[in-house]
Structures are given as C-alpha cells and as structure tokens.
Figure 1: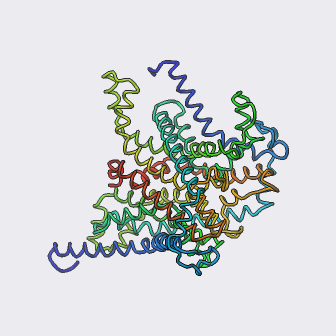
Figure 2: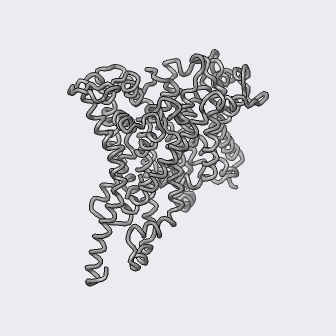
Figure 3: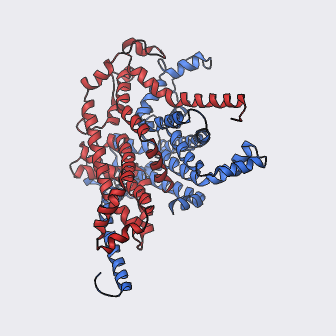
Length: 305
Length: 276
C-alpha cells in the first residue's frame, strides 16, 4: 500500500483482505468437504446399490430397490412412529418443565446459586451414563423406581419398565426429560434475563396478576429464545440413538429411525438398505427443520443476524 | 419480602422437589457404586458400609484405563484441530466482507445440525480406507464433523463483538491478515477459545454412535462405548456396581468442570445456539 491515492489503496486492501479470507477458510472448507460432504455423497450413492458392508467396492446399481425395501418394512414405519412420539412428547415436556424451572431460577431467593449449579449436573452427565443409570433404576426386581412406587402405594407389584412394550417408550422419554430439561431451562433463563424488570413493575402497578404478566410480557418477549431452544431440542430428539440403544438395544417397541438404520447397516451388514434408511432420515430431518425454521423464522433470523 | 408465608413455603417446596429430581439419580449411582455382593440387591437409600471394590475392579478386570486414555486422545486432538482451523475461519467470516459469506455461514451451521447417522456408511468407508478403523485417530477425524462447525460458529459470534478499530492500527503498520489474527485476535480470544473448546470437548467425550460403529476392541474404544458394553455372564447378571463405578469415574470430572466453569458454559451454550 505504498503507491496510489488513498481510495485505490483502500480497494486494493479490500481485495487483498478478501483473498486472505478465502485462504483462511480453505482448510475448514476442505476438512468439512472431506468429513461431511464426501461421506454424505457416498452414503446416498450406496443407497442405490446392493453393497454389503464387508465389501463396499463390489456394489452394483439396483436403482430404488433399497428404498422400496425400507418403505415396505413395517419395522421402518414402527421406528418412524417411535421417533415422532419420542420427539413430540419429550420436547413438549422439556419445554413446559424447562420454562417452569427457568422461572424458578429467575426469581430471587436464598439458595438460587446452588439450584442454578444443580441444573448443570444432569446436562454434564454423559448420555450413555444417564442411560445406564436409569436402566438400573428401572430394574424390575432391584430397581429404586419400583421400590419407591411400592412404598408410596402406587403400584402393587413391580413393573418391568423397559421390557414391557407398554411402558418402555415412556420410560425412555422420562430419562431424556431428566437429561435435557436443564439445557432447555438454561436457554430460556438466558432469554428471561434480557427482559427488563421495569416492564413487570409497571404491569404490577397497573394491577396485572402473575399469570397475566406471564402471558402478556414474558411469553411474547421470550419467543426468540423459545424458538431456538425448540429447534435445537427437536433436531436432537429426531436423531436420538445412544439413549435408546443403551437402554433397550434394538427392541422394536422403542427403536428409533437411527437405531433402525444402524441395525440394517452394521448388524445385518446390508450397506445398501442401511444407506437408503440413512438418507431417508436425512430427508425427514431436513424437511422438519425447514418447516420449523419457516414457522419460527422471525426469532431465528434475528438470532442469526 | 412481601410474598406471604404460604406462598414462600410452596416455592421452597417446589425448589426442594426440583433439587431432588435433578440430583437423586446421580446420588443413586454413587450409592450403588459403593455396594457389593448382596447389598446391591437391597434398596438401601444410604450405603450400609461403603466398599471400594467396584472401583478397583473397573481397572483391574477390564481395560478401563485404556478407554480413558483413548477418550482423552480423541477429544483433545479433535478439539485442538477444530480450534486452530476455526480461529482463522471465524476471522474470515466475522471481520471481512465478501460475496457468499452469509451462504457459507449457513452451510456451516447446516453441517453442525445435520444428523450423524446420515453419513454413517460413507464415514465407515472413509475410515476403513484410511486404515483408521478401531483407532482413536479415526474417531478424532470423524468428530471434526461436529466440533469444527460448532467452534467456527461460536468463535465467529464472539469475534463479531470486538471493535472494528482493533485492526486499524495494525493495518497502518502494514501487518497482513495472518499477523493480525495471531498478534491481535488470538490474545483477545482466550475466553472464547476456552468456552468453545470446553463445550466441544464435552460433546466429543460423550459421543457414542461413531465410537460404537468405528471401533471393535479396546485398542480404539472410548469411555462411553466401554460403559455401554460392560456385561456380565448374562443379561440378568449385569455387574451394576462396576457399571456405576465406571460411570461415576467419568462423570465426576465433567460435573466438577461444569460447576467450575458454570458461567462460561452458560454463555457458550447461549452464544452457540442463540446465534445458531
């Protein structure tokens, strides 16, 4: 930047900066292309072949056969149903409970610091650990859940929570709620803390009660935070694998889409059908996210700037 | 306090119930890990006589030490690479205006959101071809799919907040963009790097789907896989005491870390998600 009038030097500087920017982005983009783009393309491509996992090179093109196999498999549709029930029930419970916890944590009281710290604990427990932990608590003969419920007189004989088709999914959902609600409440609490206190004070002066203040002030102002929390939790829940796999293995009553796809791919070594299922999951989750973001867009776009 | 006494009592009760709900499962894991033999099969809410046998057995009767080393290697290498690449990418995305920047940002965000299962076959093939099956390095590489977009996103969000004037003085002195990043931004990004590194480390430490699929033996197995696969003679004879001891061993550092860095974690979670 030695020669030329200042304006030209500025333009030249800008071009130089843009070149540097692309250079800085290059390693990141190359890595993402290698570990995300390429594997995604290969998975989609293998979904149109008869590949076996042990010999992916010997794959032959079979058109849409694998997709036909998946879409006519009742187990696939069962897993889609399980995933949708798991997602909608756990995310709604987490939203309601998370909101309640966030409101408690936002209030001023002795011991608030301790409670805020305690909220982080289920979040910090690894998912596999929380799955094993709850599996043990649900144990039919030695589990603490049955013991507590018997002592309280709510059940008269022990229930095999995870083995019984009628209770397994609910039991797994309860575990997810325990683990994920804290995350939800922390996001909502961060949103709550941006609401100016004076708004509540003037509403109180005007005679608005607690519920009215919540509906008229808190909810509308919290909309962006709620939208973001919902999007994140929903996308997380739709792809759930570890919790389900550790608690109930490949059992049909709880298997989600991810469990189904991995079973085809690894346990049955069927890379064609497994990859087709992986791609279908990708489409389902993609569609849900696009729909979600379209509905909740105002809050989301503002956050993303 | 203007709130009435019954009101406050009710609030206190709710807070206590919440505390119990949050902490009881973890307490129960600790209690179980300190029981052995027949004590495991009696529901005692206080451990009768704490015994440490399960903690010894975890290391003596299986390769849990090896699993911990693997987890540390996998999580720290993937985070180190993600931070190094992410710092420069974040500078480009937050401080330089160029065509397609917004699109790139959304692409990176998209990668961080898309389900790991969608790439499972292709990733399996990639890791096999590179000869990294059942090796920690294979997991470090595959984990970049979520650690890298996450760190880029959080670091971009942080870097945007720094004042524009920062670079002007350096640019007048003729410093190039590389020097600007290393000399000016790196020292200021300490807290942001710590926050995003910590969160990415925790996610990598806990990852299960890839770790289960791309490893076969203890040569490559990480802690979550080891804990999920601890088994006894049959499905009905799982060594619960040992499973809980292993669980406590890997959870305790995370809980301490979470409590020590409480503020940082909450800030990172909200920065990573409110902006993403």
